[in-house]
Amino acid sequence: MIFATLPEGGRDGSLLIVNRARTYGLRAGSTAPSLQSLLDDWDRRIEAVQALSGQLESGSRSDALDLRHVRLTAPLPRAYQFLDGSAYPNHMSVIRQARSAAMPSDFFETPLMYQGSADRIIGPTEPILLLEDNAYGVDIEAEIVVVTADVPQSVPVNEASEYVRLIGLLNDVSLRNLIPPELARGFGFLQGKSANSMAPFLVTPDEVGDLWDGNLLSGRYECHIRGELIGELDPGIDAVFTYPQLIAHASRTRELTAGTIIGAGALANADRKHGCGCIAELRAREQLASGEPKTSYLKFGDELRLEMFDRRGKSIFGAIHQRLESWPTDV
Image 1 (cartoon, one colour):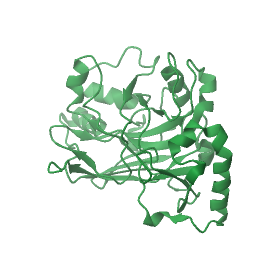
Image 2 (image 1 turned 30 degrees about the vertical axis):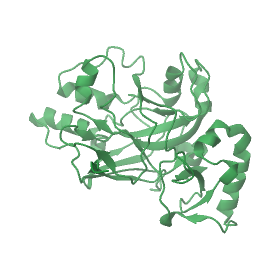
Image 3 (image 1 turned 180 degrees about the vertical axis):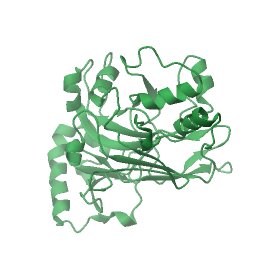
C-alpha cells in the first residue's frame, strides 16, 4: 500500500490511502485518522485500511481526491524519533580523505548512528527556511529510510526485517559549517542538523516487489541541485550495513516505538560514475582532484530535487522538490 498525508486535522495530518498509479487518494477517516495512529495500532486497523485501498484501486469510490489538486505534507509530519546511520563508506571516506582525517577504526564492524530531529518533518514542496545560507553551509543528504513497528529490545538481526512497516525517501538537511565545531566538543549534532524533508509517499515493502530484498532497496535515485544532476545512485549496493542490522543496533539497549524512522545515511556508490548524494562529497572530490572545491553549498533561491525510480522508470515515492529560502524575520 501507499500512504500520504493531508495538512489538516491537527499536527499529524489526515491519512490518505493512495492508489498504485499515485494519482488518487482516499481519506482513511476514522479507520486510521493519521499515519501514526495506523502505525500505533497496525494489527487491528490494517485489514480495514486494506479494504479501503481495494475500493480505491477498483475505482468504486467517488470521494477519491485527485492528487494533482491537493497539497501533501510529509507522510509523517512528526515522528517519535529519527535514528540515522552511516552505512555507505564511499560517502564518509571521500570527505575524510579531503580533510586528511582517518575513518573510525571500527567503521566496518559497528554501525555509526546518531539520534536526529523528527519532531518536525518538512513536506516535499515546502521551502527550507533558515536565517543564513553562507554561514551555515546548507547541504542535502539523499537517503532511503524505513519506518518501524514497535521493536523489542535487542531484536536479532535475522528477525529485524519483520518490523519494517514502511519505506520512504528523505532529505537529511545538513549545515556543514556548523557540524565540525559541534563534533569537536564531543557531544554530537544539534544545530548542524536542520529539519529534514520527506517525499510525499511512504510505501509498504510489498509495494516495491523485488527491489526490496529485506535488507536494502534497489533502484535509481536521482539528486539535482540548481537544476543540475549530481547523483544517479543505487542504494541497494555498496552499503556495509543493512536495515535489519541498523534496527538491531538501535534496539540493543531499548525498545523502539512504532513510527521510528531508521536511515542508512547519505547514499554513495563505489563507482564514481554514479555521482554524489550530497554537496559535501562533491566538494571533497573536487578538492582531491584540483586542490580546492568549486561547487558551493545551497544559497537562498537555490532548488533541489530528489526522486527514486524503479526499473520501469516509475517514481516510487514521488519527489522532494524544494527551494532554500530566508526565514521571515518579520513574522
